[in-house]
Length: 574
Image 1 (cartoon, rainbow, N blue to C red):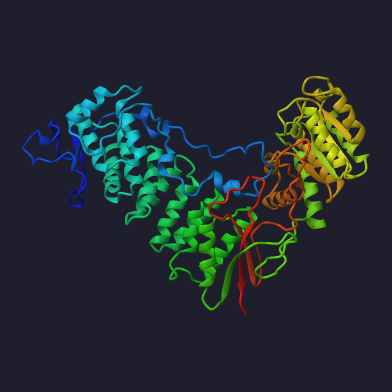
Image 2: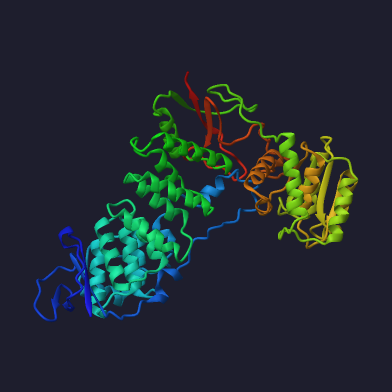
C-alpha cells in the first residue's frame, strides 16, 4: 500500500510513496505507523490505494463520447467557401468539451465553500437524481468551474469513506485543474497519475498537453504528445498546444517541425495556433521564419480559409513590423466589379482560365464519372444513355437539380415549386436542363402530373432511376456545356470534391463551384431571388507589393453559402 498527496501550497507539492494514511475523521489524516501532523482537508487530499488496485476502465475517459471530427453541412446551404471547415474545428475548444459528461437533472446545488465529510454525507442523502452522486457532483463542478478547495474537500470525503479515489474522479479533478489553469495542481496530478497508474488513457494525455504546454514543464506536454501518437492520431488541438508552448519558450525549430507534421497528417491548424506563429517574439523571427509565415498565408489561400478578426489583426501587425520594409495595412471592402476600395487594385477573377477549365473538366469526368466513385449509384446503361443525350444537345446555360430545388418549399405539390423556379429562369431566355427522378413522373400529392408536363414543354428534362445520385450527372452536363454554364443545387458537393486526384484540382473545383453555383437563399412563388455571383475570387491573394486577405468580422454571422465582405489590404510602400 502507498499514498499520494495533493497540496494547494507550493512548498508541499511532492509525492509521498512511502506512507500509508488512515482516515480517522474528515479533518484528520493519521499514519498507521506513527502520528503525523494534522491537515485541513481543504489544504491536503490523501489518496490511498493498493499498488495492484485495478483502474476503473469502464468509467475512464476513453468511454466518454468524443466530438465528431467530421460534421456534415445542413442541406439548406450551398457552399461554405472554406470557412465552415475552420468553424467545425473551433480554435478555442475548451478542454471540458473533449469529454462530454452527462449532467443529471437534479435540484441539488453545489456548496459555496468546502464541506466536512458530514456535510457531503448530508448532501448525498438528499440527492434524488439518477446515476452516481459522485459523478454528478464533479460534473457540476466542471460545469460551474467550482473552486478547487471545494473539489478537494469532496475528494477528501470520498477518500475517507472508501479508502481510495477512483480513476474516474481523479480524471475529472484533472479536468477542473486544467480548466482553471492551476499549474501547481496540474503538476501534482501529472506526477501522481504517472506514478499511480503508469499507462494513462489517451484522454488524459490530451488534458496534460493542454495543462502543461504553457508552463515551465512544457517539455512534458511534448512527451505526452509523443506518447499519444503510439495509440492514436493526435488532434489539431493537441499539436496546437505544443506549438504554442514551443514558441512561448523560444524553440521555433520544434514549433515548425510540429506544424509540418500536423499538415502531413491532414489536420487543419486552429486559428490560435497560427496566431501564435505571427505573434512570436521578434528575436525568433529571422528571414527563414518570415518565409515560413508567408507559406502559412499561402496555406490559407490554397485551403480557402478565412481568418477571423483577431488573427487578421496579428497578420496586419506582423507585416507592419517587418524589418527594412514598410507596409501599410487598411481594413476595407471590395466593389462589385472586384476593385479594392483602399488601393484600387483589381482582385483575381472568380472564373477559371481556359487551361484551368479543361484540366478541371478532364479530372472531374475521369474521377467522378469514369472512376471508382463510391458516391455514384447508377447503372452502366443509364450512364451511357445520359452521356449520349447530353452530347447530342446544344450547350446548356443552367443545369437544375430538380429534386433538390423542389424541396425548397414544404408545401405540396413539390412539383409547383420546381415549375415556378424553372419557369422564372426560362422566361429570361436561358437554355435549361432539369435532372429529376422517375418517381416524379407519376401523379401524386407531391408531384402533379400537369406540372411535370408543363415543365417538359418549356425545358429539357432527364429522369434518372430513383436510386441514382444526380450530382455526377449534374457536374457532367454543366462542365460539358462550357465555362458559361451554371447550376442550381443546395448540395455542397463535398464528397465529389474529395474524389478529385490532388489538392490543385480540388482548389480549381472549389473556385469553379463558387463561380457557377447559383444560390436560392429563400423561396417565394412570387419572388424567385437568385444570389448574385461575385466577379472576383474571395480568397487570400497577393502581388509583389500587396496582399489582400478576406476575413470574418467579429459579431457578423454568415450563412454557409456566403463569403466575407471585409478585407485586409496590405500595401508595400516604395
